[in-house]
Length: 86
Image (tube, rainbow, N blue to C red; front, side, top):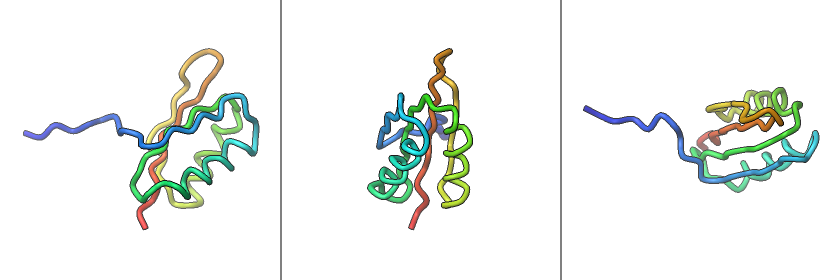
């Protein structure tokens, strides 16, 4: 019997709360460059445009969007992005 960790552990955290487009995606791009292939980045954002921009960023550049959730009424959006392997 194997036990799977259903919640990926993130290695990097990127807090973009209070920033507006295009800053969250620009900071994600920098974080992706600094991460190793397969590492997970947690992004916290308050800009509603990230609900469109971060999934598109992942789709176009080949990274995996592991999860996307809204944390509270503010709202704060939380994303987990896994950098593609080289």
